[in-house]
Every structure is written in structure tokens, then in C-alpha cells.
Amino acid sequence: MAKLTKEMAFNIKGFGKLENMFTFVSDYSLIMTEKQERILTAALHLFAKQGYTSTSTSKVAKEAGVSEGLIFRHFENKQGLLDAIMQQGQEKVNEMFDMLSTFKDPKDVIRQIIDVPFSLKEEDKPFWKLLYALKWQAEVYDDRMSKPIKSLLVPAFQAMGYDDPEAEAEVLLMIMDGLAVALLLRKPANTEEIKKRILNKYHL
Image (tube, rainbow, N blue to C red; front, side, top):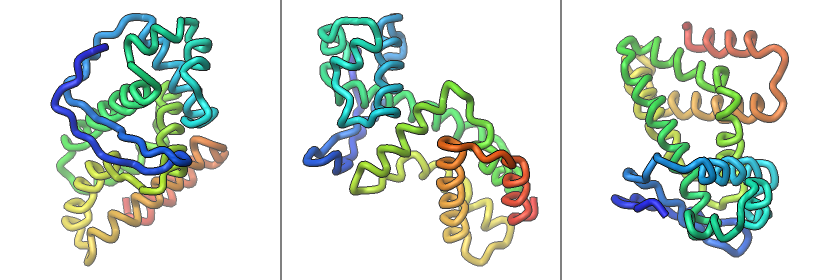
């Protein structure tokens, strides 16, 4: 298994009687074999579709077309699979944060953040479906993914003269949460009109 270093861990309670540790690592090797990539793709697909607790490593192995032993060799167990998937997702969030950080005009920052759920790539949707499914399966809401976005929204709303930029940032994050769920699960036909209305709310 690739070496894990500089671990940053946080607890999420839930999944029945289980307590899980999702570990984000800053030095997880991104150089994977074709089989490892197939395993993670299969795990992501099944976790998002069937749920983490309902998916066994044997199901993942069958979906990926590999032996279950290979999963144990590279990822140790099912939790290791989830850790690797969440690490990949965190890297996507970091990339998005780096891109959003380049905008200086506060209106541009808010406009680009609002655009995020509307411009999700098809290949990224299974990860976000999994992330939102885990929020419902867990007893404790974790804001690790949304914190970087909030850190951009608060000063943007402050620069635009909002009397409570912290609260306004939370309001927009709640709107984005609901919007992301709708777009991932049913994709309304009038997405452009919905986007326009959210932009109008912030005079963008």
C-alpha cells in the first residue's frame, strides 16, 4: 500500500454501530496502477449507489474485476478504500479553492462559487453523490469540504457591505447544499433560470 504520512484525521460517527475514521493525508501517492484505479472507481460507484455499509470488499472486487486479496494488499480494508476516495475528493476541493482564490473582485468570487454545482463534470458526480450520502448516514455533519469555500465567502460578503457576512456565507452554503442535491439526483429542467435567480439575489 502507498505510504501515508502527515495524517490529518477527524471522526465521523454513524453507519449503524460503527464509528469511522476518515483520514485525509497530504502525501498519499497519486501514482497508481491501472488495477488500483479500477478498484477505486468501482468502490466509488458502489459506495455512492448502494451505500458504504451495504458494500463489501467482495462486491468491489467483483465490480473491478480483481481478486479481493488485491484490495487488501493495496488498501488494507474497506475503510482504506474510503480514505483513498476521500483523499482524491479533498484534492479536487483544494484545486477548486486554488482557482477561486485567484479572483480579486468579491462579486467574481461569489459568482464562481455559485457556478460550481452547475458545472460539475460527469466523472466527478459519483464522488459528490457519495459525499452527500455520507452526510445523511453520519450523525455528525463534517464541514471540512465547505470550510475553504466559506473562508472565501465571508470576506467577499464583507467587502460587498453585508451587515452579517458570516451568516450570509452560511445562507449561501445552505442554498448550494440543496442545489447540489437537486442537480445530482434529479437535475431540474430549468437550471439556467434557477442559476439566474440565485445570481440576482446577490445582484450579480
